[in-house]
Image (tube, rainbow, N blue to C red):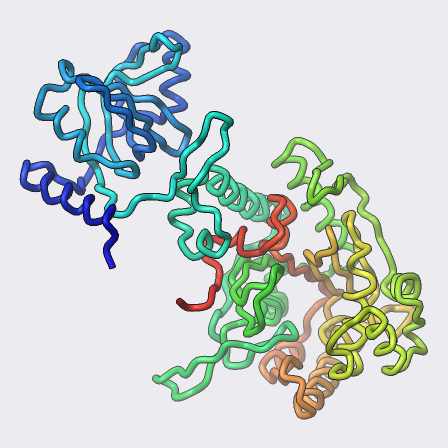
Length: 490
């Protein structure tokens, strides 16, 4: 249903067409941004500028009209005058609305109130907005009323969110800088960026349910990848000794503040390295990124002062569980683990067993304690079917996870390269699948064949880009850092 406001805008659209004014332009020769025009004017440059953006305010006063134009750099006041524009062009201003995209040309001057302003000598309509943007109004105290604020509506209509919130645009510029830094860092260390299949005949590399699709040409089921890992390690087998990919992965799981079914991972693998090497590299990457982006290693986030100065803390998985859950994992039974979860009011303890119980105890009792950047080393072997056994303790694997603000940001292994041991691990996962664990790994015969050709020792890391952005941008919900997150269909 068209609202009264939208109907009025459509009437203005008809009148524009009747007057011979094109409502949707093909091109405009913009010469500068608002910010740069102001800087040039302050430096004594009196150049006539051509600027383009959205009208975000209009104040007609008879034969003069003041307005504000917003572009990617900020806002700039406009001054329209009947004598300057002529009756026809000035009269067309009444057909403009807030949110319309316009181009203006003219010199800058300073008003009596001291505001730098464009004296508009020519105005061009570039796009008529048929819906009013939820710009809101600012009162005398600086508080905005009526602007777009509902979190779900902002995510559902991200285009409107971006259009009215400069801080949201800055967040996604930060995201672009983070990804650019990841590429630059890895390229600088001799890594090769590669592309691996999104559609896979056998999914793997993580414990997750996949999305599936039917490929008609082959009459076969394929899966959206849940991780990049197994294909990147195939590259290691083939002699590409340092590889990485920044890619979208997909997991058919529930949504939460920390989970979106489509998410961005950066994964990298290096031949002849182990998980200690990967910790050093990841620490250098994250610390360097924070320093470059923010000019400091200290960030105030969610009420905590986070220090990204090196070295990050390094803790042992089993020790942390003993300290915070009161359990010795080398002896604890499923009943012991369930008892701990029940004391913490976990609702699904009875439905979990084995490795999933251990993982849930860690998430419940330990993760809330991990605020500062912390590497947690040496996980139980049952939790990590793709990692090598720890050199001095075969009940553990050489794996670490990096936590910041209670969130796991990265996961790394000394990669398992024994094909027979990998087959045994896959077969153990298959038994779990047969018992009803839909997230257990499948047996990937092609990957096993690759390992049989010989994969050198290797270290690998998976970094959750979205979760890293949540920390860096001080956001508590993952959908705030994803341009177009998954939402329930309307």
